[in-house]
Amino acid sequence: MARITVEDCLTKVPNRFILVNMVAKRVRQIREGSEYLVSSPKNEDVVVSLREVAAGKVVLKPENEMEEEPATESATEPETEPETEKEELDAEV
Image (cartoon, rainbow, N blue to C red; front, side, top):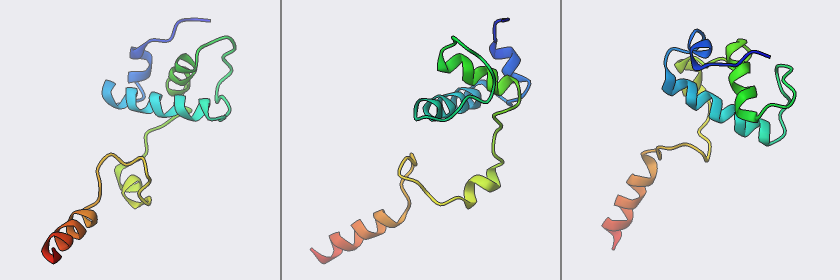
């Protein structure tokens, strides 16, 4: 089977940074038990994920869909509510 390159994937994804993020998330899904979306025996999970992106099987969600989803524990930025609670606690002391 031919080698997969980043350039092959960049035709489907706008930039390298988003590509890395997408592939990392997909690798986690595969390692947690998700099935492969392309037939790629004897390859590492990272290579399979790159092949899936290049094949168009893994796509980037539009920003408006991402905003509508509820926040998960893996969110990198905390919401503003905990900061206000902290301020309230400081005011009570």
